[in-house]
Length: 479
Image (cartoon, rainbow, N blue to C red):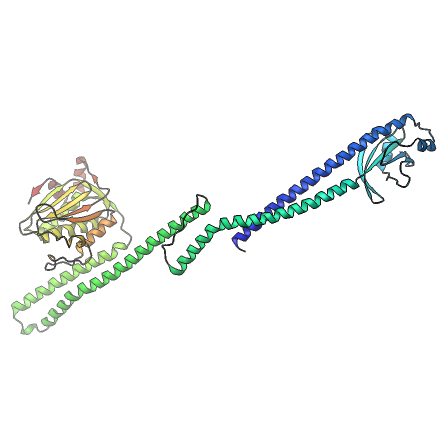
């Protein structure tokens, strides 16, 4: 059964119950009112009958009573204590005599009413004392009252049926209006299920439950669309990563294989050439190792992150710079590190900082300094190299992207992509720009980074063996 039909039947049923209850109550009240009117008439007749007491005595013969008559209309009869009818107004009609009537004739008491049926006539009977040893019964036919009640009942039945029909009609109209938004929701859900098109939306029609349902449905579609777009982007990124990785791996693997095949004939080679070839193999293995490490880091970027902890960014940068000095002894570093702490994964943050610094060193001419600055929520790394062209600037953080200046230099093209991935995981960002004076300026925004008070620096230095070097380089120095 459809929802609209259930609403219609519920509306008609509710109206039918209301009409039935109203009809029963109205019938009861009308019947009671009409009976009260008849009872009032009977009481009035009873007061007229009391005047006969003055004419009648306990020893008055029956014939005298009959001759005196009862000056009233309807049915009346006078009953003795033994149940004998002393007189009646209509000889052919004898009212039923009950034990209550005989008790009233013998003992007296209060009048009472009852209903009776005599010769098929429905009567309302009033019984009251009529002198010592007698009781009088006064009866009024209820034929007209019954006819009126029957007519009223038929009218109520017809009105009730008409009311139920109208209730069903209007209930159907109301149900159609109420179900219309639900039908739109149903069509939208069926359209999404059939076509997988998540662009379908429902226009809310109000602030009621159905309106809120439409808003919730739209919000669900928005969430599904974002999830599907993110999933599509993730799948596309994975496929692109696999394609780019296979392309990047093909050249060093082919070169490494060629060199190894040549080394198989090393007995016919000059020792100097063989040693140079072995050095190339080692270098190629190192490049492959670096490429595989970067690929693993990128592939793990979508996995649940390790537990974050408070990281002293200035201390971490100092440690990375100290390690870079050992790899690049000819490059001076200018450090201006404001003590700061941020919540993150130390290993990932260290890798991002190391990639930024290594990238700056690779493009710096010999002897030119690399500037590293921490201010508030920003870590800035600047080199004095040739800079990045305007065409390459928007793509330097893409996976495997190698600009014209980078194609002849070592590297996998994944270092800056890892930096952007770490920035995204921290809720921050990384940008590249061409500053005045040449070179390249990389800015890593670390949201939530807090400046550390000077009083906390000794404790930070005590936690890290290399922290003293970073704290010593806090102010701008040249090495």
